[in-house]
Length: 395
Image (cartoon, rainbow, N blue to C red; front, side, top):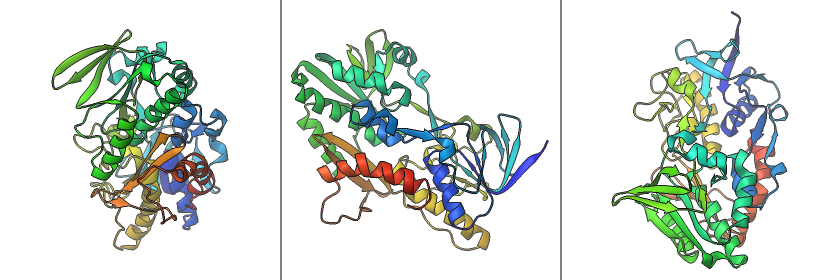
């Protein structure tokens, strides 16, 4: 069997994979390979806006072929196993691809079967999610036509891709229903399986302010245990509760990409996510294997904002490791952009220690406090930055 060899091989062409490949090329890596089966690339942060009728679905995706960086070899297949010693990747089409260094960035995948009855509820249209691009048209139809009844939205702990943004569809839906004059006829409930809405107190306080203003019934320490017909079973410390619902919006259950566990690259107790040093993004046992993004066991840093730091650091650390130099450190910086309605958004940034951070050039305005400027940035500016700056390795 012929084995294709590259100086650096990247597994996955999502946000992290494409940006890493582009940065490698810009930093002088002449031979970069990319393993990715998808022919379409989706800008995930825009999904909540499409699902709430605030963006056109045509803005959401582009052909993958148009985004592969110049000089990068695209292997249009899926990685099914990685030999972490030889760094040979076995692909679904039977080919083998090797890398001097391997960056594992296949993301995470949705698993509706993790909640009993959820897959059927999604199929029937009883449950919706703006985190699944295949469900966005249905989500908008269900939200805009609801005039009365009970609406349940969910938030849950890790693993979750863009977890904080689960409040976007909730608060934007409440804003829509208020403008349509039907908000008082809809009982809106948020259930979250953890004790706190957010580990950073300042962010949590801002969230509570908007949830209180919207009149949302917040249930912490509660999860959706099952969906049975048009009923939802809520499980908490006080026991189970069955609720009849008219709209159920789910932050999906996420599981690790199968290639990670199949290759023995996973961290114990994480359910199959890449076992990397969260400071250096280097695999703990295999020094020429690296992990970033949703696929890596990095704690809460599963956002596009987090990847902006991770892709830069992993590229620099590959270079530093080869030169025998000290590696750069990733501080866990990530973002929590939450649209609160009426064209306003809170653009909180924080790091692993729980400290608030700032990366935006506008210093005169508080990023945590919801404002029109941050909504414009998130809805209109960042999509263009993503397509033309982040995925090309410029940002």
